[in-house]
Length: 152
Image (cartoon, rainbow, N blue to C red; front, side, top):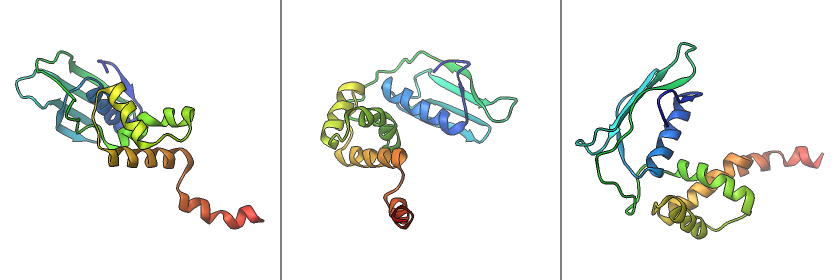
């Protein structure tokens, strides 16, 4: 994440920002958020870190316009990070599930702790794994709807 980084839309930018916050062990709060701009700062009010991104002239691409890169606060994810959401877990574990096959939520939880130094609850990892499978293969319900087509 740096000034000039471009993203396809605000959703991709927010996902990248969540990943950046988790990997760099800090929390943030959103000051402004609408379809054309996004401004956030470190949750610790004494810290100088802040980022602002807005839509470019093509009215689709999101670009980081300003960013104070240095944090002046002490950081630790040992107790968990509220930005380590079920969606973030699904994005992080997708590649691991593709390469290693079916991995238990317990093993995924240990892997996330080792890789990202974030302690997330078992149930959140379980739901993130289910979401990753849904993103990769689609919903189970949709598969059953196609049974008649498959039979033919």
